[in-house]
Length: 419
Image 1 (cartoon, rainbow, N blue to C red):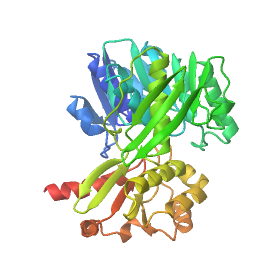
Image 2 (cartoon, rainbow, N blue to C red):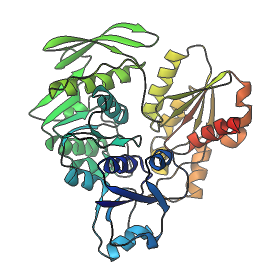
Image 3 (cartoon, rainbow, N blue to C red):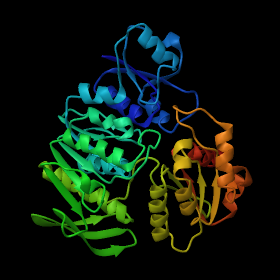
Image 4 (cartoon, rainbow, N blue to C red):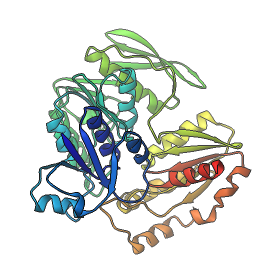
């Protein structure tokens, strides 16, 4: 089969492209000219990436369209005018990848939890992870990150659905927490088994006849207890029918939730999960680079709660170091809706440098909106106030943060040293 992916640099689309390529299909795609962190691994896989152009489109391909692109995109418009076969990303996965599925959803931690699932299976499964990584494998199991945006996860009908947590996000679509919880309830209705974080008040509102809860509270079906803490992680007891004794090689309580959800999901379905011994994480999740006497951190966090969790983890790891952040907010809608929370969490860093908002494909650059945001965050530095080349003179932690292009500053810094 010949597939053409419109918006192939998107994290989910990139992962799907790799899966389809591994299955022996011909895979081509297109996207914007700007470099994005997913594209290098696509090229390494032998997948051609073109610039958007209506002349790319013909009847040779089955088209998969990324969820970020609407009919204003020249290729999408051409596909529809000519009535070529196409499906949107989430619909294609739900209808065409006929696999036994473990899906992971939740406002936070779904990429990491999906990644843990694949590693505990020694990557012997098909998978699509939200860091752009994907793989096709010759068995029936698909491990899938399921995004709640615009209810896209309703296209999936998993054997087991992990619900990590529910907190308001994507406020351009969900106008209240009640709306968001209702969407998660619909996703639960599509699933055979629910493995739900019972310590999360919003997750507890989800009803299901085959719901298994996990957490630290004793009323959960699966009860977690921390036995000891080290500088490299936790030793824990997990009680579910019998006691399991696990080492979680990561810091931060949120990592324990992610780890236990992954491990117990596989146990419940009859798999034998491998205990993880190294602290590897998905791309752009606490990616650490030593740079002179500094430590550079690349992380995708773009919600106030995620930033707080990241900061707390870094403080556990580096209690005596100054922690600075170079942050690019993601979307005007999110930045304005959570502006107070962003200001509060950013204040805990020693130095803060802000980039202009990284707009999504659904937004256009808006100077008035950017000016309002600049005025609200006027007490923080702008990126122009930082001489990036002088970072090497410090001995501090520098976090390059956000779903946008803050990591490009990091990459440029590192690449200059190699020249």
